[in-house]
Amino acid sequence: MTKKPIRQDIKNLSDLEKQIKNLKSGKKAKKNVSTSGVGLGMKVATDLLAGVLVGVFIGYNLDSYFETKPLWLIVFLMFGLGAGISNVIKTANRLEQENKKNKL
Amino acid sequence: MSSPLEQFTIKTLVPINVAGVDISFTNSSLWMFISVISAVSFFMIATSGRKIVPGPFQAFAENLFDTAGNIVSDNIGSGGKAFFPAVFSLFIFVLFGNLIGLVPGAFTFTSHIAVTGAMAMIIFSFVTLFGIFKHGFKFFGLFFPSGAPIVSAPVLIPIEIVSYFSRPVSLAVRLFANMVAGHVLLKVIAGFVVSLGATYILPGIVPFVAVVAITVLEIMVAVIQAYVFAILTCVYLHDAIHLH
Image 1 (tube, rainbow over the protein chains, first blue to last red):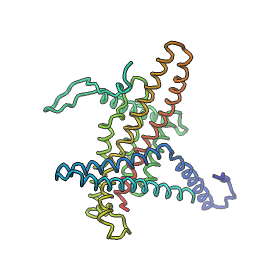
Image 2: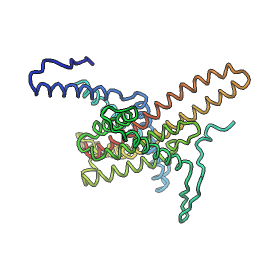
Image 3: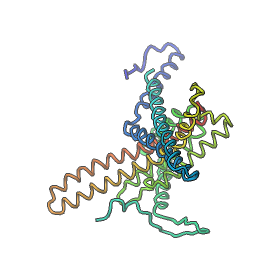
Image 4: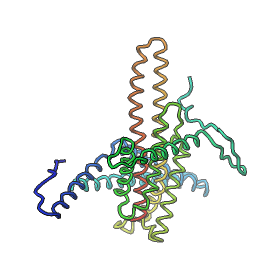
């Protein structure tokens, strides 16, 4: 981040207000960048896993309820995999939006 | 030598039994009390001075407050102010639980999936009920991404439903797995210090240095996981308030 000069030529109050706003937004943008890589990696990994786990759980219980042993397990395993990947895509999209916001 | 998993055993301190349900006061409950009391007393001491130029404690408390405030305003956006107290308390509870658990001899209550799972379920049910209460039937539009072709509904809707139910699971598993993995690692490597250093002092120094380094890493993980827990709570709240 380029350092903004604290005092440009301030002619009137609205200029000063703009200056304060500029400085404030700069400070906020700096804080947002500090999202940690370790936390993000763990989040993506568990999101992927949790989708599969929930899919298997639902499928297994439907199977033991209807006594159709492998059918629902397979179907919901597929849905679970899809859910896990959809979770990861959502995280990636949100991260990209955040990065875009910070750059502006 | 004791097992590295021994530190996670629940011990009943005061047995209480109400109508056949075991609600005993355990070491887990004790450390929850300790972390709540230390969090409350920390903030009371830190904010007792209320100086314009803050001292070290007050500056730290203000920073924590600011961090939680930023989490709420960045992730929920409009209408998020009402949830600040809840998110802040949750953040501080998990943060203090993680950090106090790192003190040797202490019990880490966040290392039990019963605890993290209960917190995740409370958040999940609250967010779901709030969403249904606020948006009515439109809330279920969350399960079908806007703009997708209607033909894909039989595949997309189950995927989105499973994805929605995977939220509390991933929230609970992440915190619990991080805490268990960190504490087991610390215990195992600390065990090497004793077994290697028992005969000659010198080889024991290597795992000792590693333990010191991992302790620093664990402090970082404790803070990050509390932070992530709070962020995700806000993200889920955001989805319930703004839908798409």
